[in-house]
Length: 115
Length: 115
Image (cartoon, rainbow over all chains, first blue to last red; front, side, top):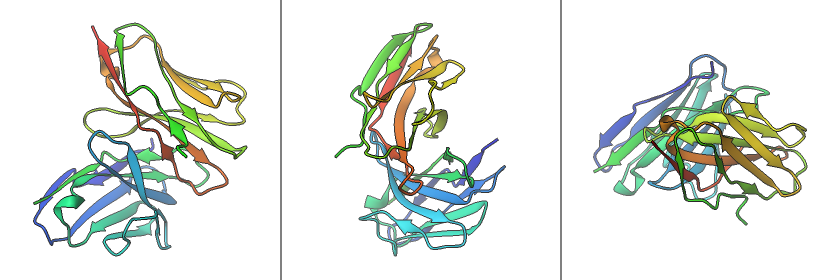
């Protein structure tokens, strides 16, 4: 149980375009989903927390207009990187947590390369 | 102030031997949770083990055990009978219950298991 999928696993896009990443909880209802960013050889940095049906809470320094997060259902959250630039190239990974649960379960991550 | 500290950037262990990965934390909250995750080179974050601050016994999950020393604010991961497949990055994380569901991650330890 507690499987989280993420799509796509890899994406290459041109500078200025937008990219959407999906995060799905496959076998449980995720009341809370999280989006992280990880640079090479570094730890995970939380970007935002989203609860189903409400606006995401962004961490300090994360541009909410650039990283749009939608959590429209209990099994799906999306992260859209708008007007992507090369500095947005990174590994983006989501996690999901059920109501009353302690553990966050992570998706396999998405490697974004902006040319 | 850094809340999760992993002082070992890299560790080596021979196959079938036990290894301890260090983690210390800092919090003024009485209620908190401590987690260990494994990140192989493929990138996904795999949940290993959880310890609640009020749990009197050390958590164990198969070959993984958490050496929880509350007074020292340490939560070391012990892997017994290391296997080649244990080679990965290992992250310690903490959740403060008074706060949101956010996890705070350490900088990680790269474990390499050799034959």
